Length: 265
Image 1 (cartoon, rainbow, N blue to C red):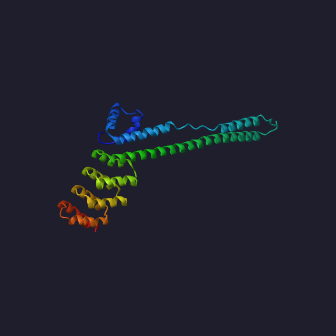
Image 2: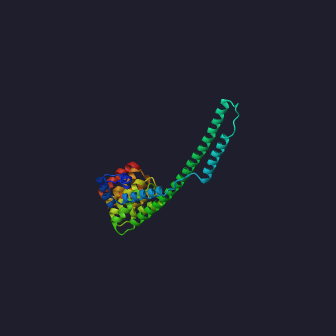
Image 3: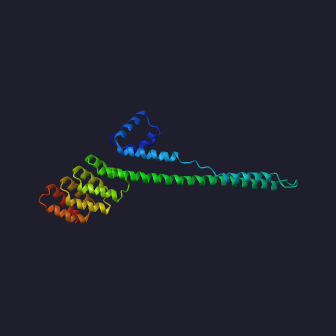
């Protein structure tokens, strides 16, 4: 549990449904894992939203109409029935009465569930607003971390992209900036690793090609070359060739370039 996220245990953790040993281990993990702390905060916000959801009851007007219908049926039942009425007529009368009452009950129940559906829609909208606000908070936190003076904090900010299903241009641009210009090799390497998951974006592809022109660390050069080779990016052929022709390029980097160039040219 020290190295793995425990998000699947968080609902039971909030509900106090874990064993003492599990609860202790989850609490220990939460002290050191910012990602799971954020997931716990999200769940707590959702629980608050659900707890604050109002219970929907039929409107006063609807109840009034229903009871008026009942009184009307009582009055109809008190109407004098001729002695010579047939059994069949009595049967039809009571059946019609029962159908009318059933229709009234159906109307009441239908109105209740309609109101419930409306309430659920309102609740869904509230949750969507919470999610939007939370996403904005996460983005602000990520961008702030990537501008931190501490290299370890910048790396933490780079990896924070895992919190986003579809990172927007601002996030991708911030990551690209770290990959191209960060003074710390480890931060640049982390940015390469993370951005490699989003090479379906033209912005990311172009950033990798640009990084190939400016990056001097052999390890990062190889990571960039492998990524561009994996996606078969033909626009990378020219900067790879230039890097191959440079005398200062390490031999093992040149070997990597040659193997990739053969597949993309």
